[in-house]
Image 1: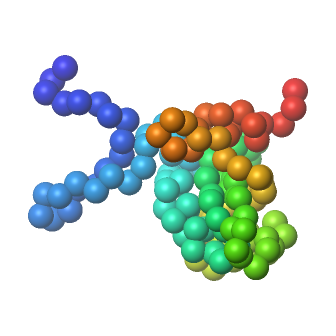
Image 2 (image 1 turned 180 degrees about the vertical axis):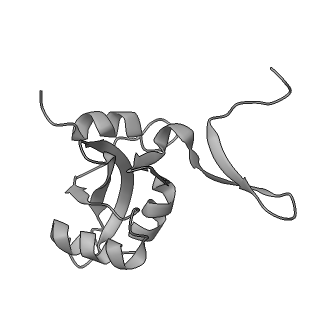
Length: 131
């Protein structure tokens, strides 16, 4: 197909011609017209001392189309999880105004596939409001 392999990855090419993978296209969140790359948000949130694991997903939002939602597993050696608003406020200090999560949900574990990657489709299903 035209010499390209369509991996579904999003990347950036620098001045030297090197490509850096940013995230998966299907995982990108579009919040109010802004593209939010979950990996970028996850990397920042992973720096919080109470966070053991984190995954960021988009959840439906009537105003913005999608909202940024952080799903967090506590670090067992950490200081204990802050409440949701404290985590949102901490995130706001470290991320751009359209990138920080407006929702934080705490779980005991994240759904992982055979390669130990987070199954975001499964996570979105778990986080969806009941019908």
